[in-house]
Image 1 (cartoon, rainbow, N blue to C red):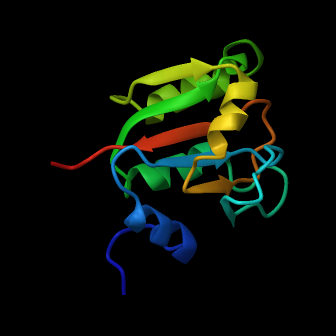
Image 2: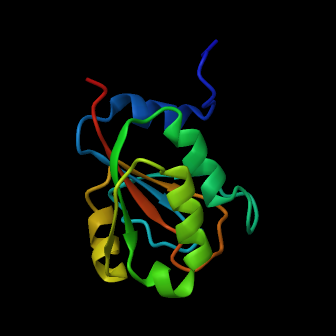
Length: 131
């Protein structure tokens, strides 16, 4: 049995296959997911699981060199942005307009759909290297 905490097989598999600069999107329940990008759907009901809990679990498995969020998050979901900053303590976070964020999702290895229902509660985690 696996020793690390992450139990979801598809999510663990995607993380294990990622290389430097590959992107993993952690999304709220409403973000459109491009048809050609792998969808890992964790959503059960509205609010479950929360995006922050999923990001925390992923941070235990994935080396992240930077994060990208929608600039609209500052205005519409400041508390979510602060929560993300608390989890991504040493990870630089940049902002792009939401339309650009959605375009970036097309290049992601996968989109992890959570039950989060907070506006603009999405983050792209860009893989780093451990050496």
